[in-house]
Image (cartoon, rainbow, N blue to C red):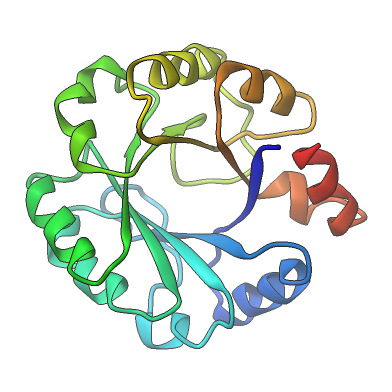
Length: 207
């Protein structure tokens, strides 16, 4: 069974809290997008002190420029289990991995739609997860790009020792194909939070 992780992308901390409360009975982790208005045009809430008060395990997705300079403040949070940085933004992955691993956390490498799977081959040995972005990062509710499935297949084929995560555009209509392509985990936002029954949506995506 594929693991479903609710994705949260918000500017208001109270909305983040509300969404966490909605899914907490059904999942053990949420995926929190952090945007700086530089790497992507959009911004989100990004105060680590308040994020630390969320009573749930977190995967933190840093959609920020130069994550080497900010990753430590996220990796040190007790409720953060994993940190994702972007291949397109990071200039010193060794340093990022060192900082995150020193806190006992896992490291993931995210790749945007224009970045090939083979193009990050030299970096994969350093990380625990590769995250295939199914849409251009920055906004939820987008339709998944059609080459996402092939990228998932390539990642599973070439990178057997890392988890393959898909983020962006995950729906009930494409989740089976993503799993068949080799996805280990699916991050879903609209497919969960826009559903009339959140519990049923999570269960249906995982089935």
